[in-house]
Image: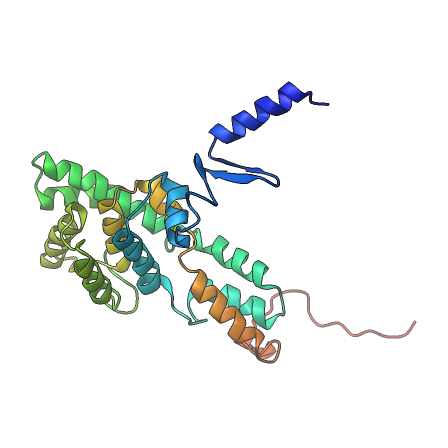
Length: 268
């Protein structure tokens, strides 16, 4: 068993760490009292404080909220990760399981969190070279030789309907001319003029706006990890409100079965 001094040492350790709960007394959140110093924080402000250790002003918090609202809050069960949440609803699973599974599939390589990490990495790397005098075309050509450029291009359609409203919000808040968002425009112009003819997509704008507010690659990833949840919730609720199994029903004769052939059972 722990003695009194060991318990006191453990308490001091947690108090100086990222946070701790002191039963019946208080909660320490990154060195601040949750109830008395952070009690007036918005949920988004507290989330960002937990991720970065920084306190953001009201305009910055509104920008981060807008990134989530405009970029990822689509209540359409046809969208890849929303479909998981909706299928959980139609199969009568729980809301928490639907959210957890949908978040898990968002942690992918070619969509969701994977490209988000890659585009902010590219922005940091490319802008650093540009500030040292490298040519935009040279930067893009070198990048393409190593890997695809994330944040540009989009399946199904060429344009991204989210760019204009998010850009408008950023400009209204005074964040439309930051270093990375301005550099992103230079990249897009070069890619549009090239044989690739690629426009930026919303992941690139999200990353640039976050980078302009001082988020690093890991902080950006953590910030975006819950960004699809409104779509998950609404799709789950909608599917749960209908008859079980009616979401995306598939006829048995549409399945190409290649297993053991049908067998007949006879009495011995």
